[in-house]
Amino acid sequence: MPRGRFLHRRSEHAYTDRLDKAMHNEPEVVSEDVQAGLTADAHLRQREEILTKVREERAQIEAALKRLESQPWGGRFRNHIAHVRRELERMQRLA
Image 1 (cartoon, rainbow, N blue to C red):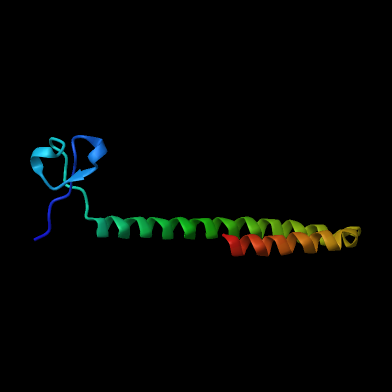
Image 2 (cartoon, one colour):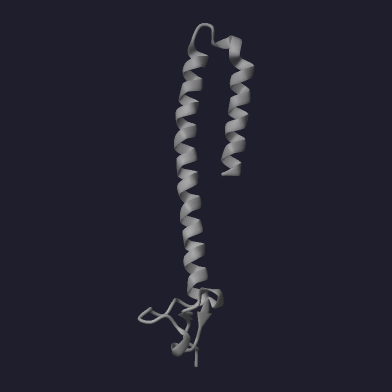
């Protein structure tokens, strides 16, 4: 039979399975497995949000680079633009 998991009334003890040592009127906390699953889900959602934002910002930067390239003097910056594109690809991999 699984034991209860309650917040201990003295924070240095974290959790207890004894109601007489638990904080009064506090609900039982979720199991460690459930908490691990919730944490993993939150990390996955955060990663997806970061990837989405990086893609959106990268698209805007790429559009600006194309506008620079299309200028009559844009060829002067060809190497620099290529460098920025490589860095954008690197950022995408890191995200």
